[in-house]
Amino acid sequence: MKVLMINGSPHKNGCTYTALNIIAEELKAQGVGSEIVWLGNGPVRGCIGCGGCKKSGKDRCIFGDDGVADIAEKCKTADGYIFGAPVHYASPNGATVAALDRIFYSAGKYMQFKPAASIVSARRAGTTASYDVLNKYIGINNMLMVPASYWNMVHGNTPEEVMQDKEGVSVMRGIGSNMAWLLKLLASAKGGELEKPAVVPKERTNFIR
Image (tube, rainbow, N blue to C red; front, side, top):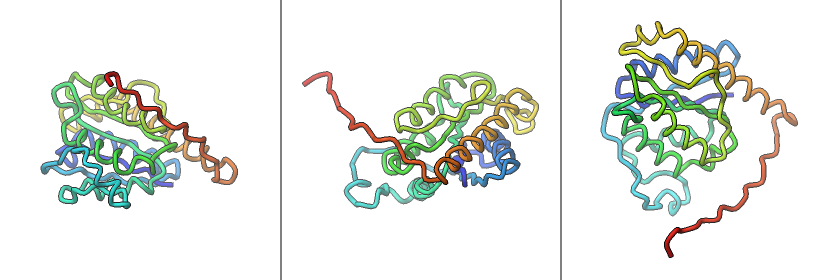
């Protein structure tokens, strides 16, 4: 079992990474592997809705110069997911949103019915709004949202300050523990071959015709 964690912060080892690493340590203690992938600090293209990922037959984004397509490939085989982002102007930073748009559009079907959680990091405010934005990716894709004892956020302006946020640290540890529990629960069902629920065909309704 392996959990893929996406660090969307432009700072590789900053506050968002610190929160994700707390989760990784708890997963390890529970016998579950993990990998933290960094989105980087270069430009990240937004999805242009071209449908190229579907037309290619490979479910791979046609933009291959910013690393997002490679992360999406990792998403196809992971067992669980954590999406981490810093708060910029009361919203997840733009690079994370652009990346997740493309990841879910191109590889979302491989992520369905798997557990996931989102976490946000801020110096002070904007966390709940950002948390809601990230959770919508999970909610629209038939995924299982990993529970926690509070909103999935940490506060601090440096990694050291994040570690002083004792409640935030305990929430991150709880996410790791609950993620491990859910993965083990799913693996134990029918010897790890739990049948997925039937996908109800989506009815698309336009408000103006």
